[in-house]
Length: 359
Ligand code: DAH
Image (cartoon, rainbow, N blue to C red; front, side, top):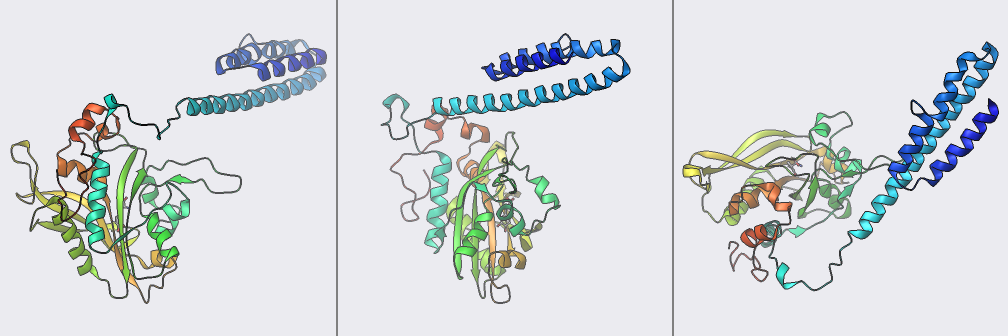
């Protein structure tokens, strides 16, 4: 039987190595390990052997099974990686090519609203900071006072990437808050930044997409207090929605990285199915905010006995929908030219406070 085992082994391993696609590989698997497979066939003959032989041959067959299964897994991983590489190569787009006239688009509402937000905060003296989309666990969670077993980690529906040997899994950042830490580490107070960018959570319905956009705000100085937070956000909301005296509500809330924490609502009405910001007696939540937690300052290398400040995080897609009356979030990322022609902006209408922020 040992001869048979050896020859089956050589044959099967050679065929695994030669399998050019997942289907061919699966055929090899069935022919070796399936109900009528060669190895299964040998297993069935064990019953006719003496107890001594059975033990020995059984062990050899189990070893063979494991070896074949491992070889199949390895080959499968290789084939999948090759297929992904081929697909990435085939879908490569040369963004430097000139536009085709029939595909002429317009500025996407997310880009427009990001520029509007930047214009408003830059006028107040903020700078724009950036961080990577692929983050370390520590920047995305730990440094923001979200410890290992904290439920907030689960709330975030995180996309993890495969870990390098001996490292923690990197994450697609679930919010723009890690940019706070990176900026604190890289500079000394006073700090005044916003950080717009892409964020990712495994979530998808009319108001959630797996990739979405946030803008983070961070202000750190020696005497910065809650009044500054409220004034700053009020100025922003009035400039952005272009309405004076918008009713605003600062609701106590909880975020691990701020204390106290507040969610901010703006007054609106939904009369006749039409949303009007700044009047009526309904409320819409637009952002989370609070005074930066001392642990977060420490993680950023800032002395919490000397400095304090506020932070906020806001969904860009969401305020774009509210301001421009766009109903379905998913359509934002369908790359449908008709949608873009309807909701998009002219390339030369750069938003500025003096030139106007709206269409
Ligand atoms: N990171 C929070 C989120 O994604 C939003 C947020 C809330 C950011 C409060 C902040 C903050 O900076 O102070 O849900």
